[in-house]
Image 1 (cartoon, rainbow, N blue to C red):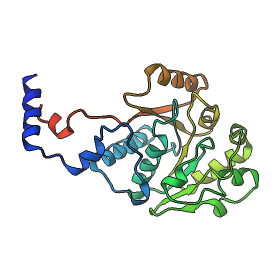
Image 2 (tube, rainbow, N blue to C red):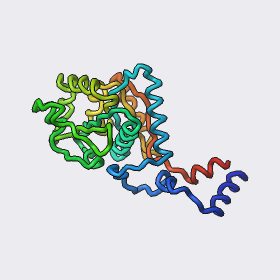
Image 3 (tube, helix red, strand yellow):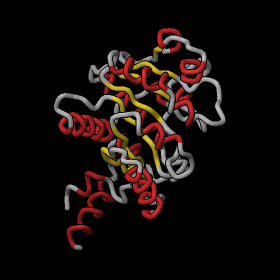
Image 4 (cartoon, one colour):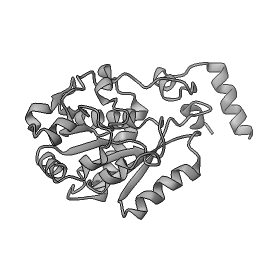
Length: 249
């Protein structure tokens, strides 16, 4: 306790918090997601995404894990922001990345990356449009996106099709990573249907908000469907004192 007090006292006396920590450790629960068109690397966050990339590569030495699904247990846990930041981190490291907005319930990747939403995954699978017609470039080198396209009331049936299987196979031949954004697991069946088609799923859990029972229910749903869970991300974790102060303890 004495060391904790001394660290806090020193932090108060210096009143110097690195600018990047103001962003990383924002305690405002109503803070809006970063607008990623002008993405700027925050060292602490970027390092975590690089560590995540390395963990995925280490788990699959031959890089057989290429198509990944990101989903949360319930809505509002920041999945779209997490997957977009991860995609940008991969792309800036030189990997070729294709983002796919498979969240027809609440598509948002087009807004985060400032591209047109129309003509996307729906048109690819239902209208037999080619990938070349629908894939969109972003402002980041090595990063492209396929938006959700026209709204569908029952997208799960779309993901069960042979066309979707062919689409994933085709994308794996063109990119190092194919990242799918999906609706919440506990609310819609879309994520479970999608997860069965990809190499694995990463759960996004919001710190200090999502109850463990809710996250556990999502995990059990996936396990019952024999879905490969690659890991979980604790999003929006708050530091009650700056990280640099913790290092003094």
